[in-house]
Image (cartoon, rainbow, N blue to C red; front, side, top):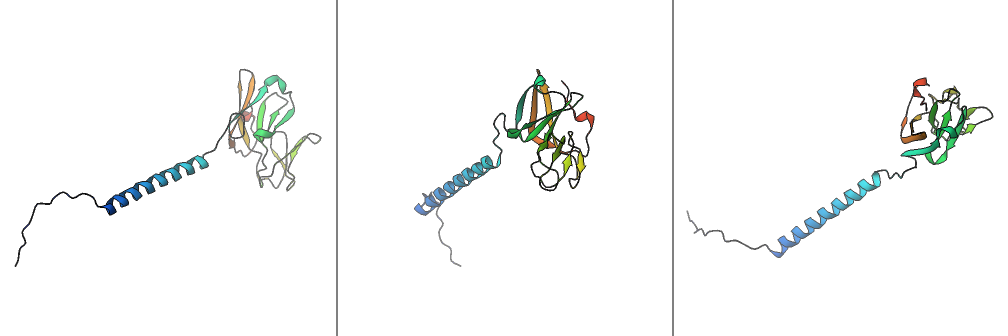
Length: 167
């Protein structure tokens, strides 16, 4: 058996190939990080104050007479003030297939133009095929100003007087 003399491992400097591999690896990592951050920013909602997806200031309580329904197109909702002076913010999206539902003041109803679902002033279903009432948004009254939070529609199975907000 032949043995070869061993020498202590001398420190070797990285080769050009090792340096290029390391450089390409760092560049690929930075590119992947930038792509991930750009994707995250694209996926996250950008909400400005007073736009759909945020809190919308509607105005003073006294601007809304009892029995009125006021559209807020930028917020995609109607602010209903019922006869008992309670406020209810109704999402204007039909619960059947998502069509925009206009308010018909002559009939006192929301009538869906797609499949003729009808809803009363509280969003309760009067005529199918809508399976449930119009969704609502949270309403707050702060220092006499009505504010509606459109960040999350609140689903409901029926109208409940506890859903109303009073000044």
